[in-house]
Image 1 (cartoon, rainbow, N blue to C red):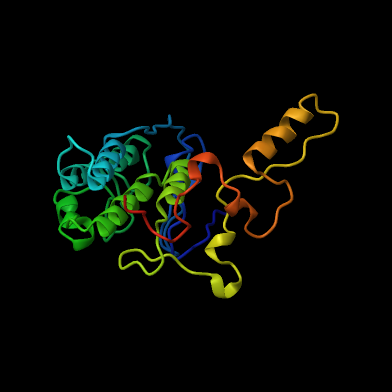
Image 2: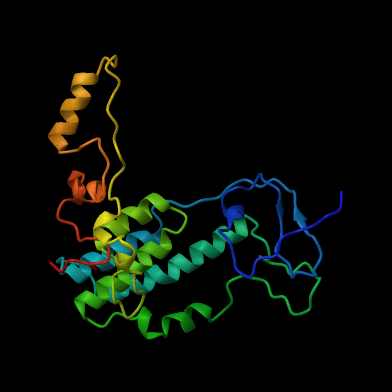
Length: 245
């Protein structure tokens, strides 16, 4: 069977970061060679990292919590650590083009983090806190969302509690689909629940728990947005941006 591949002019989700035992065809130009990765790799992940902790500290410092350093101290440390942590994951998980170009094109470059790249990134205005609480919190939450790229549950919870990305942002504006009959108030903020079977031994308790929480089982536009779980009560709507204490 002849070898082949499909070319896309964009980058897809990097599944090799999570599925080291799967076989993958590496991305190459349309007329390039077919290169396959068939080696099984152990999976390396991360949880409660230096970057995550310092982003929370930056958030708390912006709120004005006593006993903390300047928010910029934590923010700068967090962003730097986040980049370094993902670079380390790419190396440990043997992501394509990390540490090699496969020698098929003299113009190809390895994707390893290079000296000075973090400093160059941090020199841009969007990576600097200025003391403007609203703007600083938006920047901090954006970095939290980016850091949680491979932790979608944490990413969802962060977007839900922060209202970021926000509409009309000067950094990362949220797309508004209200004109397509999909306003922010329609997007879910919790999972749906269904009526239990009448033969379920916990039927009465389940129904009572739904009533206690104010949850309906008939889905409609905005139901999963307006009927919120306890930790979401009072949080900003999607796209509203952070609430300033």
